[in-house]
Length: 366
Image 1 (cartoon, rainbow, N blue to C red):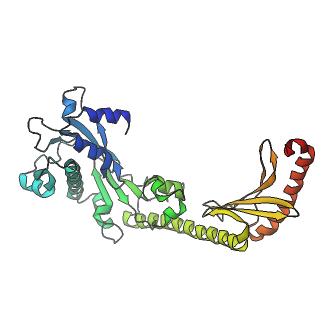
Image 2: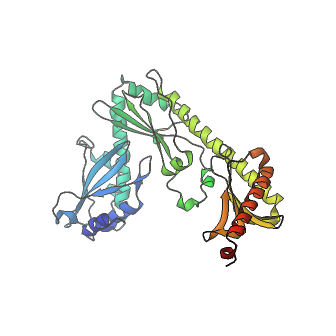
């Protein structure tokens, strides 16, 4: 936890601190599953014990909701102050009981209570935004939303809606076939920087500037992805499947390339089983001898194989240069004649190493 947030949470009364700690450490909201941020309200140190501001991810916005506890009645649920004055302004008891059951059944002994209330309130806020959109039946955005939900690819749970004065935003979760992608990230699934989430942000009336938002993991694996232009005459129900297909095709290409990479390594390992020093899904190190010259072949295959050929490095077992093993990174090799190419390069490398020995024989022997 950052020092600033730690100091901020430590200022909150111990009666309410568990609720805040649970939110900060465990609560993730929105289609992007982002963590909730915290802010102080004002500069009054006394108020800091009982109130704070939550910064909640929603669409491309940050909702800022104030949470206010009362030390005289710590068993009661907190009050809320929303940055949208019209949200829940006319809510009656029945609406709150149905929409926010965790609020009416508040459990002061459960640290998760506030997190559960926030989740339910965010769902109500989403319903409130959709209602505002649908009430404007003649708008282009309202038509696009209804049409988008008419196909089997997108559900209400896959879309966040925000209605402003002159702008409507849709944040749409794309359905990707990405379950096998973590296999390409060989540093361990536990270390993957985020989940495999792809979101499409579209604004109306200027829908041509659609924005693709990838999780850090997908950004690492897929790299830069250029979206096709969404024309004014185009409709979202066609554009979303098109973008989804582009990403899924790119993912499938990566998986196909990864299969070729594994097959190449497997062929080398089987053929030169007795020479293998070590290997993993990305690389292999093999020890060879040719004409009394012992050398190690290091093969490193990147995620863009076969578009980019393997990186081949030769290392001499006995020879050194400036205190380090003598090595040579080979130029790009022809994929269809890798063995012949390596033999040719080894002969050149051997002569280079012997030239080093003749010139620096005393220091190398030492």
